[in-house]
Image 1 (cartoon, one colour):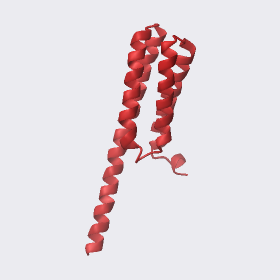
Image 2: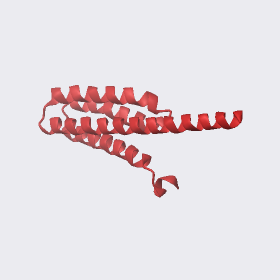
Image 3: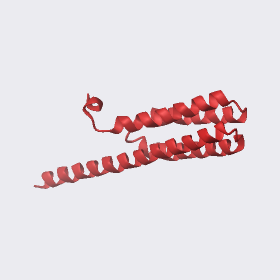
Image 4: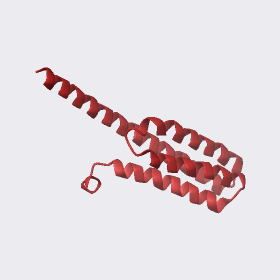
Length: 126
């Protein structure tokens, strides 16, 4: 009886952690996408100072989200977004619109891909 209760307790703890991590990952990815869309608007309007501030906010958001979620997903996904965000700050400092927009699109695509990979589908299981 003791083994059954222990197994059931561990199972429930695991399921709870998975739901918590899934919700946190969705929030983190949506925040990254929102910041990226705002950043894209600023770059298109050639507001480079506002864009730089928003890029720093993006780096902070990715850094804060990546540590706890690296237990749940592969940390290289957040590392790729983080390094692209760091490159983005340099592109914004040099007012390079083409590379800035390319970086923003890559960041948004990576965040959207992480969201799609976490959906429970037959395609994602096999």
